[in-house]
Length: 476
Image (cartoon, rainbow, N blue to C red):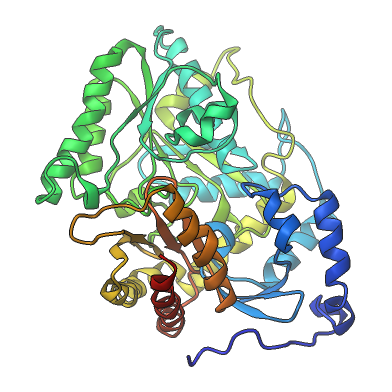
């Protein structure tokens, strides 16, 4: 391979990593085993094998505490869109901390939250002009559902409380957001959840149950399943539909042409709010500040988080249409909901600086120009016998693995365990690429690099994946 990986680095104290720090690995691993509870992770793995410890990032490269380097092929967690090591963002945080480190937006305001709300409203389509801040994507979706319920009560329609989402879709881990999530295995241990969430087929055209030879017809069929669900539940009981523009879980499931236009028609017909969950898709991942712009539809609410600050500080938002805001704009009505750190001065200041970088460096344009090149590199992997499909949009792609390409047969549970967790996750990382193997739905590997990357990095990632997937054939 032409890519140099795992090379040693020696940095001074300002660079975090030093020779002495590298020798502390045993101590760090012991502390992690004894005290750290990682998220969405089998703790047994850490006890048996230890955990990778990442100490530094620069551009699209991350470094562990042993001095090895890796391409960040997942932007942290679909988050570090402007790339690692942006001193400008650190300086924005420091400046804000010196001026006003914290103040809530409960009956008070501060300039950075005001300016960020204005900026987000300016980017959003249509009349989405009102911004309610939170600290994470799940909180933003929780906010949207609660707001939809109260809005319909204020409209004299108190029975409109239900939501409709798609199968396998992930919308967060709070009790309400988890109910909206369409992944049964993630929910069973926490039941009973918030009632009244219902799920319809997603837009996985690779496994289309209807119209598998006609993408547009399939899209209309999938959208019409939302209408059938509304009719089945009763239009007077359905408050909102939650959809990601590109569904992450299941492997970058893109909308067929006309899909969102049909969904918008259905929601308008039955007076149901449309929520565009853009926690991953916003801020350039699909080539525009908001993916609903890419796919030419105007929702009633947008939920967003992650890349608003490129992950440098936590923040999230629910962006709301003037129509939904109107009954809250006068009289004694309030929305009794909020979070201590929502609209945090430091996070808002970092977000503003991050969005400046987006505009000055035309990161959205970079995605639109280079997305076809990323797709082309990944599509070369289709030559491998276990690669059944490559799909996605922008800088957001998935490679699906199958046991039989002709029949699209999936791997069984034992085979998935051996392939994804037993081999691919470790082998790809050891080869110098950080990305994500996932089997929520079908078996996929997701690539979502920082928006600053280009053809050189695409080729390096493809070379690593090609080599590892060739070796994977021996595992299965």
